[in-house]
Length: 84
Image (cartoon, rainbow, N blue to C red):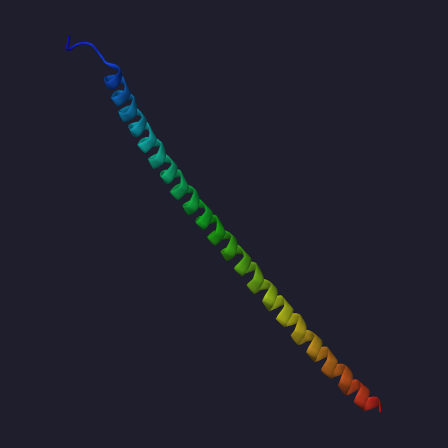
């Protein structure tokens, strides 16, 4: 009669299988979260680098425009002083 499977045997088997599946799913979820976190970090880094490059270029352009405006203002002031 040792070949008969009891309800207890079935319940224990079900519990082991459930535990194994849960462990595997949890590991896969953890792996996916790590993958997504890494990809998100990489994307943020690329975006920040691109924005920084754009900001530097714009800063140079603005600074250059400000310098040009200052030079023009000085020239206009000199011309106005010459007329006065």
